[in-house]
Length: 203
Image (cartoon, rainbow, N blue to C red; front, side, top):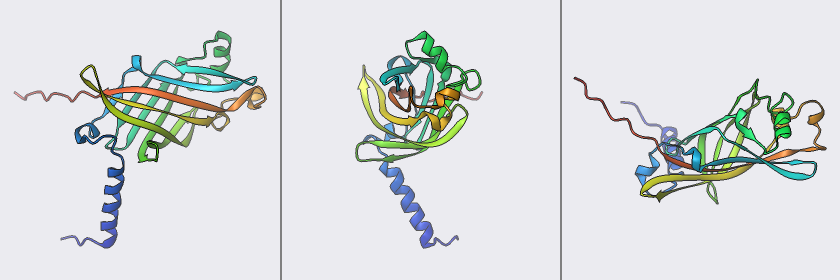
């Protein structure tokens, strides 16, 4: 029989405490569910400064997979789906000096650790954007509610990134004179439980 050492006991206690710290609701069944995005009722936007004024853009195609009990959040973004509402500006941002969507058509945020904070939660993970990967902490709120008789999860929050950290802004655009370095990303996501596969009887 394996002898349980004090260090093993401490590891088990710490693991249990971390798992217990992330409890969005009092319902264990909801906590053990994996959720996926409802695109039509969700938004992913970003705000940046250009020539001293605030401008906003959005992404229209992305997927989200959220597993609270496992502490995992996975977001994949189609960078070609961005839109700032201005055709000329879209052409510049999608080009090689900024997003370079031809070379880097997808961005991702993969979090494998979720922790509770004083105002909600935070996801600690890796953001890969324009081929550059960096550790990012994303604060968010999470709650489960009932809409039309169906259980849904509402995940929202915002975080500020520095575009130059990811190489967004090459050549003359590396300067922050006309385009600011800080970009604020906001998200308001509606998620629904992933259907549980029905076992097929073996004949």
